[in-house]
Length: 216
Image 1 (tube, rainbow, N blue to C red):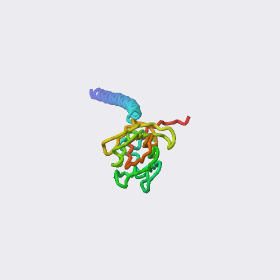
Image 2: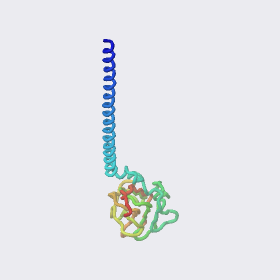
Image 3: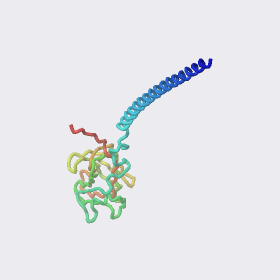
Image 4: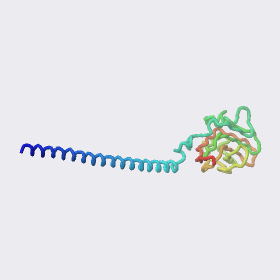
């Protein structure tokens, strides 16, 4: 009887060992399968996130892309190069983009001439939202045929933002350019012999959306 009991005990121990091996194998297999599933799902989710991130990047507003270096609320004309049809004494064209809106000795002024004009080079192409023009108190409340243009070159075709402005009542004239694209903004008195006095010009805009070229 003693030998039989020892034999049974031996069989029982072998069965337990075998069962543990089977259980461990099954557990390990299930674990590996779960790991593979997680990797596959993670990869798919990563692809999905990348895809939707790319879509969001393409269709988000231009101003939030890295392509734009200025907001539509920033004056892009400040301290930029300027020109005017003529000058009187020290009243040169840069006085209209120096950031000061003074009306005494702080304004640009042309001589009395036919179709006097003033222009600023923004040095880069912008989508112009609006132009704010501060005029001299003497001349500012009394404007005849003032026009504002946006154009790509210093000399060439010009797009009119606003034409034949005859009067205004604010300290400044606000002109809506409706997103016209250009590098230059020109203010001009049309069809008359007069003096153009401008104390400050502020141009608000942003860089237009830039396309990418593959070089093909």
